[in-house]
Amino acid sequence: MAFPAQQIRRIKKQPALAPTPFRNWAGNQECLPRSRPTPTSTTAVADIVAAAAEKGTRVKAVGAGHSFTAAACTDGALLSLDGMDRVLSIDRDRKRVTVEAGIRLSALNKQLAAVGLAMPNLGDIAYQSIAGAIATATHGTGLLLGNLATAIVGMELVSGTGEVIWCDHETRPELLRVARVGVGALGLVTKVVIQCVDSFNLQAEETIEPLDDLLDNFPTLIRENDHFEFFWIPGSRRAQVKRNNRTKEPAQPPSTFAYVRDKWVGENLAFGSICRIGRRWPAAVPRAAKLLSVSSSERSFIDRSDKVFASPRHVKFYEMEYGIPVQALPEAFRRVREFTAKLAMPILFPIECRVSAADDIPLSTASGRDSAWIACHMYQGTSYDNYFNGVEQILMDYDGRPHWGKLHFRHHQSLKPAYPEWDKFGQTRAEIDPLGTFTNGYLDRVLGPVLR
Figure 1 (cartoon, rainbow, N blue to C red):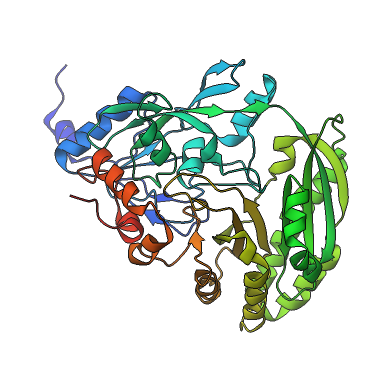
Figure 2: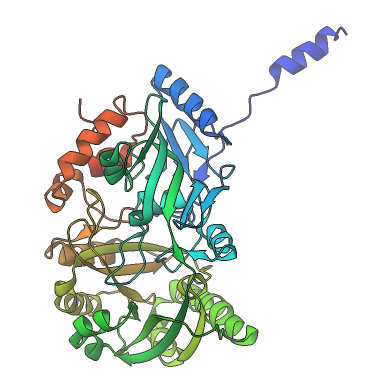
């Protein structure tokens, strides 16, 4: 069929579709990638990477976009792994599950529970993809439990030249050890094998206690509980405490009314409203913080582990979290308390304190040492530089290491001395991504250039 000349000209003048910008969950990171592919197989991912490597362009991948850093940003191809979210196989005898890298933790938890399995530990949100969670050494709390990456016993990844590589404890075990926490620099992960445990219930005890008592008794509290953490609003004398311990008792979850009241109305709707007021009228923050401290509820219940670990989080914020040696926590936290008392702008979001076990992963923030964590938050749209910078300077005095998925101001020159196997990671990066296909400005800052 022939088109009239005028119609042909009109077709030719149609502009190409504009690139779609990427913005992370918190809205503090944005980039304009050249393309936004949505591959549904490892082969498709490998083809995209190989084509980029040949052209000398960059590739990054993104899951939920829950990292507060620019780790996933690129001006090249930004892959979404949302189409690679299946559970591929379940080895019930060995309690091992193979999944595609894009599966969200919330979906994974439900599918594991359906076959009587669970993750050994989880953080307090479950929005992330499994690949994003392990790449940044995302963790929960528990002195005898490592971060989520420590549960990975097999991994498929695509190298910076498009080669598909498999590694586990028998095949390329050293690559597995290093690549479990890759910060997006050690290949594009497409599948992982997770070492799970039998499904279990937790007895949750949530109380309000004096902060000084918690700091004085911190070594005992983290040893006596499977999972221990507390949340402290600067300016208050007390903190909200969570003790979660394994139990063989049947589930006794909160009523629907109690869950909605506490998790949706209290922790999201009401808290979000108070944050908006505080952002608009900073002078109201001290009174609001006192109100939040007084109104925090105490409760006790039993439920499936993932339902206890994770909570809905709809109030958007910015976050910085640092890991320090466990024994340094009481002193460091008291110094942070003194610092926050001097800030011109009062802090409304609580500071969170957790612990996790040491591991042998070179770029894990708990590499080689049991770690205590201090996490600072600020409401979205609120200035955080002075606050986060000041806390960072304190925690660097204790050989602090920043969480890879959260904000910090460090660069590779200052980070290298904090990681005994930093050079091992750099050598592996040069092997897996010799052309720098997966790098970007953020990785150049925190990891340095790819070794040549």
